[in-house]
Image (cartoon, rainbow, N blue to C red):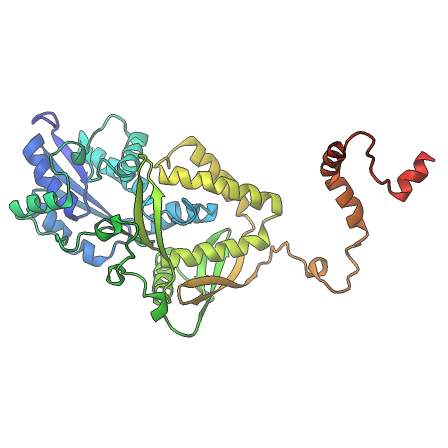
Length: 420
């Protein structure tokens, strides 16, 4: 437990949710310090930001920072991860993961501006976010003290936190009846806790916030055309949009078609498994469209190698290792692969599914005259025999070994002539 006088001024990463709401008075009570709150607007919605400044000050904050980071979040964190094709454990599109490094970076900037000697966050000691926040802070100023109340105080549950809030007159949205832990930004919303802690329980339909149930989605498909330039999405159906408008538009359209739901049990960085339900409607469309366009624009070896690195990239993001040399090196590789990922992907949205309906690019490596099953004047099919013989030579040698001494391959007619 911290001692009074040890810290003079703290900048708290403040969401206005249950945890950070009670941290403001807790810090003042236990550290006797001034508390400044910092809130990153990464698209969590006006309902979460409305009245936030007043609430923070009523809780005891001396100063409140709220900064609109939506565009920076998409351009510098979301889109690079999407271009890498990074998906954690086959399903998770990393919506919470890559928001934390940005928040940590800005938290340090405010701490420097205010002359604070510490920063604080509301992450629990069981979760991934504590690692993401703290690695981000260490990357920019390891001299700052980091206070993590969940690792110090005697509050051990959401119920305890609710009682603390009530005792201190702090209004919060969570109740003991509806006790989901949620994280929302412009890319996604996550749901954890409550009934979801039992992986046998199917998610309740009224829990979802961004997507309709697939069975209640329209009975006719919706088609969209997504334009990309050097791997980044720039337009929908030919209409250019800034990143924020583009993602918000896709969220509405895809969400109305039930697209983007994921229900998974994942391996947390701290070692335990947890169950999370994610809604990422627009992001699901962009990942699908981007992959579709890459099938035209990337050569085989680059695509296959990129797919291998995508798994490692996703781990770096999930583990909070955003500001590391390896991450920067992988970003340079990804940027190079995207130089000709320019073109259009047409997607079909239908009752929870998002599929490719067509792709085109001025840099397409696909040639119909080579791929055709009809007559062609480009590809000599006789060449395939020699290729297969050479490509299969290691398999043939092993087979001869297994057949035993004296086994010999049937020589091609030309090779027999050479020996004669």
